[in-house]
Length: 352
Image 1 (spheres, one colour):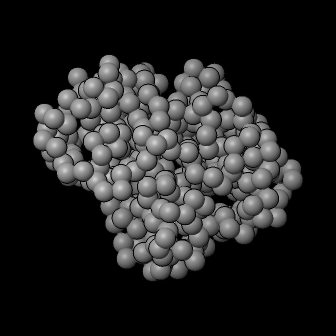
Image 2 (cartoon, rainbow, N blue to C red):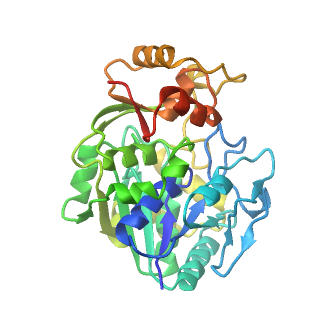
């Protein structure tokens, strides 16, 4: 018997979810992690969450949902990091496909939890799953709200875990710690981070990388593509909260549970109506300066790279590898080569 872990928002959340799983059950078998295939604009040309029709080579296992393998491939123009994560993460990665709407998604989560033989543990990196819907930095509330609502409707006992409050730049740490007050937390160890080390070496995730770096002892300011995070005392923690308490914070999740929209588009429209943020739009509209390069630049030498990054992020103690690649005119796929040039073996690049 093991729990089903649900990476709340897709993208890079499976990395942080693995760290959380290794924190909560360090001696257990490789965890089963269910995730959306919802990727950044530089990874996939499609902005919506990808479903079964967007992949070849998915494994149809016993968990009530298709699983990724290293041989799974996205069908262009879709792109996905999940096949490579299936190769590099010691976990079973299941695809959550919300294309048919809320009720079928809830049934799939229930079936996967029953097959795993345990309860559900939702993991959110950063804490926007506790949004009230009106925070000034909020940019992607829909996926997390959909996860909360589906888990509620599944009827499976569920706990919500918030890792690294504020590190995703959507809700500030002070506000989140107020919402988490009275709830306990776990303190992950470097051993938990080591389980995700191979994937952290190349994946463009920033929130999971920031959390992993905080667990490994990084402190100070860290520049990411769209925000600057401050790594402090609370940053390494993994907080826990009953599902209904989390739903109580999340206005969109409550509305989804109450209205039970029949399609994904109707659910996204409901979220848009309540928050003003389009539910199925890209996570953020990139400014011209931040557009992924059409023709990646050659790798600079170490001193030139560091000088450029220090000038671009004055006063920052660290930058994410995604930010470094963008700033140097490189693609996210150049991250491993850039790490070699910079001699970096940690989730963040230290500048000072």
